[in-house]
Amino acid sequence: MNLFTHTDIERLYFNGLRSETGKDHFPVVKLFRPNSNDIWLFSELNPNNTLMFLGLSGKGLGSLYVGYTDYRELISGKNDPANRVMRDPHFSPRHRMSVYISAAMSLGFVTELEPVLQRHSRISRSPPGFGLN
Image (cartoon, rainbow, N blue to C red; front, side, top):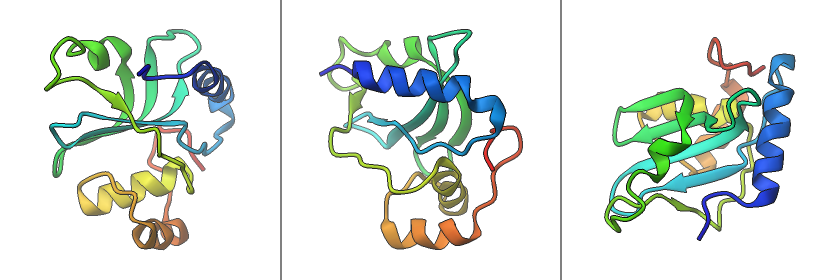
């Protein structure tokens, strides 16, 4: 399974072009590593470097990162089934990135639990430097 569809790449690229407007995008894709707690939610592709994806990364409890991830890092373990990154085909974002980020920062890990996300949708404020409002 491919990590990104053609439509994903188009949406990520378009969001990246619009990132300077301060738009709080919905995540486009969720990636994960099946044998670990590694999760990535991406909302933008850097239009100046199309190997760099902007989003939220969680690598286990308390290890969160908001920023760019290099595509080469994601595919580095593709030949090792234990380290392979996969796309979540069932992911359907219901909130903007700022909500996922706020919830993750509060909990220490990336979550899709709707009651938690709803609570953070009422209180979320964009992290500095992420370009979200």
